[in-house]
Structures are given as structure tokens and as C-alpha cells.
Length: 111
Image (cartoon, helix red, strand yellow):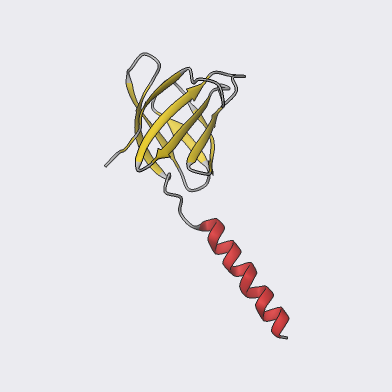
């Protein structure tokens, strides 16, 4: 009986942890490759949307100290926490994420 109760508690805590909000959820102000501002919204369900271009949508997940966004266009964007400062880096379709980014800018949480 004790084992069953312990297992149920562990399953419940694991489920709760997976539902806990990420520090990356919300709206982020960033800039595109031409320096034009736009916003990225990261939802709690792993959906990403941007105000740049028509239909810019994708999925995201937290990986270490970054939110990694995979756009339907094939591009990948990372919003990284660098010691309390946030930075956005963007990578072209097929570009390795350890290569120099195609674009980078500050990332600021919209208020």
C-alpha cells in the first residue's frame, strides 16, 4: 500500500512539474535580420507565433537556459538567458545551432 501511495505521489509531482510555467512563456520584443522590431509569443502549450511575416508560427521548448523555437519556415530561433540578460539568435533553415547565427539581437520581455 505504501509503495502505491508513494508511486501516485511521484506521478502527481512529475505531472505538476511538466505543467509548471516556463520563465520563457510570454511575449518577447526582438529584431529581425534587417533590424526591424517584431514580437515573439511563446505559449504554455509549446506554440510560438511572431508578428513578423504572415503566418509565422512554430513550436518551442525550453532547453537548458534557452527557449528553442522551430518555425514552420525552417528557421530556428533561440532566446537565451545570459546571466539575467536575454539574447535572441536566429539560424537559417539547415544551419547548425552551434554555428554563428544569421542574426542576433537583444530580447526583452514585453510589459
